[in-house]
Length: 126
Image 1 (cartoon, rainbow, N blue to C red):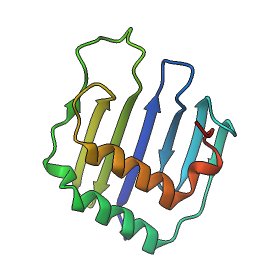
Image 2: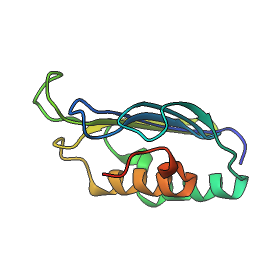
Image 3: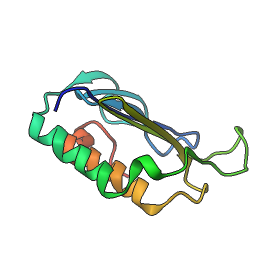
């Protein structure tokens, strides 16, 4: 799969949930509450990239709203997740928080991407 970019970024403000960014080629950068902080690069096959893109398509990612954020404001202790995908010339970025009434499929998608890319080796067990 050429011209595919996938990124996930979690920003936690509660000193419990992990904060990290993940870019597929797979680049992991742990910033807080993770097992292995810092930048790590993993290899991922084209087949796995295609599998991840299929997961985005299965939840109609490009049809979802751009934001699902709670009205709590920036001082909130909520974890914010930003997930984006570019396939060819199509691009979509979604920001959501745990109280932002996002579809459950977004959290499920993030979990599936984490599992496929095996970044759990860097994220702390909760």
